[in-house]
Length: 339
Ligand code: ATP
Image 1 (cartoon, rainbow, N blue to C red):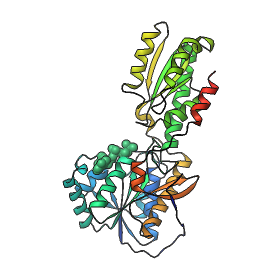
Image 2: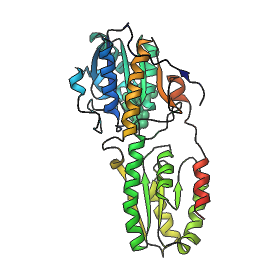
Image 3: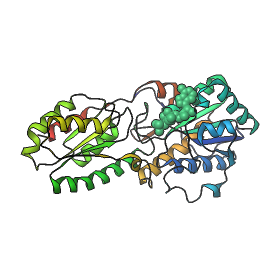
């Protein structure tokens, strides 16, 4: 990975700030609470006051703030969702909305903000930091794992395991009834969740936006593979693969192969919730500590990332503008194994 800066991780530093805000934004992701806890306790250990901003940017605009003490983040590391709640705010996309948010931050005496969310949330932070003198540090929290500059985003691993668990169960029915299941997984424009879950479940075909070749693989499987195997199959479709997702694919399959018993399963929000895996908790904790480290080092407009297991700082403008690199190796493996 390029364009990253290694940071030092010494522990206790003399504070230059007085009060920080922390909030979650965009879709919730398991592990966000672990990040809130780490941010809060690291800030408190460095004699900073901490304000939790509820309901993302909308809460910032409305001044929906709550002081966070160490006890407020006790017993949350194992919880999915976010204790600060999250939201999508249309108003924050306007200069007037951001001005309201800025006034609320000023009134509350907040000097810097840690934002836990995805690229939309970071774009909002970047825009506001260019308009007003306020530091934002981003922690990538999204099940999509689609951020440039980090190998990992909080919640991805938990979501991946949830998908694998669900598809394993669906496989039992597919095999027992000799059916083809078309399973749609989340990920918006990114196919990483679909690709990795498909590999982990031994899916016969994986359809992702990053590779159109797989549509040919689907045709081949339906024409030959289905009969030569166990007469059942799992086709994983990333929600962003094409408009209509799994339902559209199922219409095409039924039209071309009326003889097949085809079912659709859209996993939906089951993928977003649940208790975070150990790795999601550990990485969220490391990122939360690193975010406060960065603020104490006078950093501004950066995202905390993980590069080969190491904490790195990535400029926010790169994190939001550049695409997450797509590793084609897993797709090659998928092709090789599905002979
Ligand atoms: P996820 O990947 O889980 O969807 P996200 O952070 O990408 O998370 P978005 O809904 O895209 O989620 O963005 C969250 C919020 O960030 C939006 O509701 C909006 O308030 C703010 N935001 C997004 N894009 C912009 C923008 N271009 N300018 C200002 N604010 C923005």
